[in-house]
Image 1 (spheres, rainbow, N blue to C red):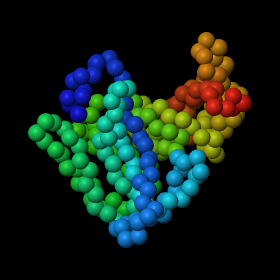
Image 2 (image 1 turned 30 degrees about the horizontal axis):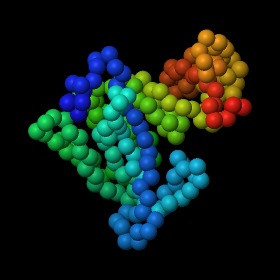
Image 3 (image 1 turned 90 degrees about the vertical axis):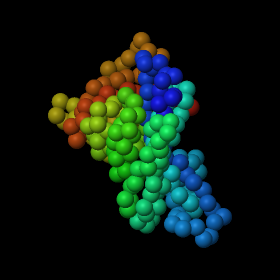
Length: 209
């Protein structure tokens, strides 16, 4: 990790990336802690037999390094996550008996461990599956900014003290004409008090959205 950091320009942004990958074991029958999982990233939105591999990675735009990866299971489990911190040392992070829970509950601790082991990053990148108010607030408290997509959910934002939906927020946002692909943007606050900037962009795959 330190070798890669030395090769990276100091002015180049360094980020942590959150990803939730499917570890498919559909043909297995006698694998410890095998579970039926839902693949939210698949276009088929399918169920599969296997595990969910929650991964925290580091990137400078050219290199990607996975640095923490607990596996989501349905029973209590003692996991060991390994993080290489120097040439001659391998730190074993003992995650004591992680109980089955939503991956969102584990991410703040994963990021905290990375920062404690001198992993440099200014941003955390994630998709819409993870961009929820409790997680965003927990990451911001650790001194990192969050960049992620947002789903159309029942989530509300505060504008002049009034809660509004994402659709209503779009109507209140100011149009942006100078930047290609960006339609509107607005500074607002999540209901949990976390300040955010919402940027509305054109869907490249579906021009009507």
